[in-house]
Each structure stands twice: as structure tokens, then as C-alpha cells.
Image (tube, rainbow, N blue to C red; front, side, top):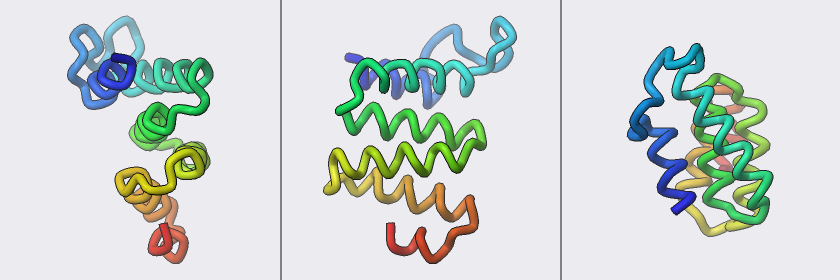
Length: 101
């Protein structure tokens, strides 16, 4: 249930979390939830991936790269996490590393 709730928040599917609600937009709220959940469930690679996605949406690429790397250490076979890391590295203009992700 946690993963589907986080996915809904990050992709904008959760009700009441639109832009500007209570002074916090949905991206900020997604990062808050995903980051907090990652603390509670540090060994869950899916939660780490979702946290990284929320960091990318906020433009915090360096932090997202580190969280993606943690998720890959936890689940090295997850192609989606490798793709996310590659995209984050591309945004950070680290094209050589992106190709290897």
C-alpha cells in the first residue's frame, strides 16, 4: 500500500495535493512523504526509487542521483531504477556516467 500511495502522490494522482495547496506544491509534498518513508523503510528499493523521482521533480538532481544509487545497490536488476539514474545524470550533464547507468 505504501508504494502505491507514494506513486499516486509523485505522479499527481492523490487528491488534495495540487499545486499551491496550503503553500506546499505536490512535488514538495511528494518529497516529504517519500523521504520520510525511506527513513522508515531504508531497505525498500522501490521507495528509494520513488524518493529519487520526487527529488528530480524538485530539481534536486545531486540528491536524486545518490538516492538512485542506493536503490540500485538494493535491487541491481531493476531496469526502471537504472533508467531513472541515467535520466538524472543526463540532467546533471554527466553524459558518460548516464550511458553506463
